[in-house]
Image 1 (cartoon, rainbow, N blue to C red):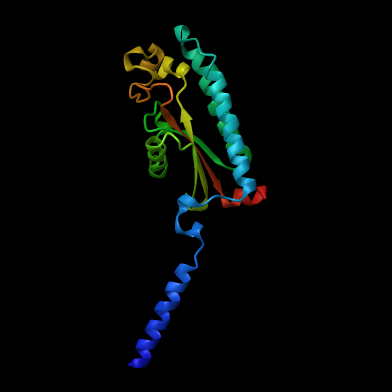
Image 2 (image 1 turned 120 degrees about the horizontal axis):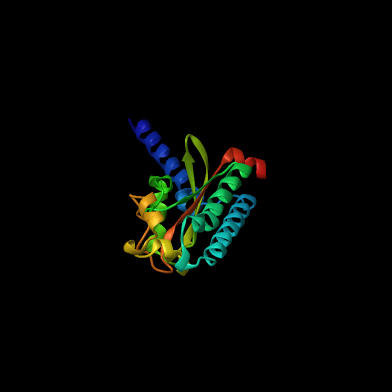
Length: 198
């Protein structure tokens, strides 16, 4: 009986020791970041994408917003995000809880990330370790901030352009103010893709 008690104590002590020896990064996926080569590539790519979005948004004439404005300002950003994902083997998305296109509705994990950005204006980006469609990898999220020029389509509900009202009957992407959280860029980098960039 004493031997069993001794063995149980020994096993318990070993378990406590092993738990105590875990690296700080293993305690929370929120605190993890990928290798520098991956981190820098993703962060620089999304920073460039965001610069493109903001520079195009700055060209909007609020008095003359129509479908051509969307094709000239918003569509190129989505196309570049898609090309970036295809070229690198990443999944690049623009997601928001107040979405206009249902394709931009966040998954549960992205919704939690969105909430974190919504609760802190100081939070601009975050990395987490995750699994997507059975593949392990890294997920990066970066804040998308509403610019004043964006209000031509994303301001008061009643002031939205007719093409938006008619084309998106279930639109939720209105009522914003400059500086608000519009949504997040989300990038999933599977380990298989990450290995190619090392």
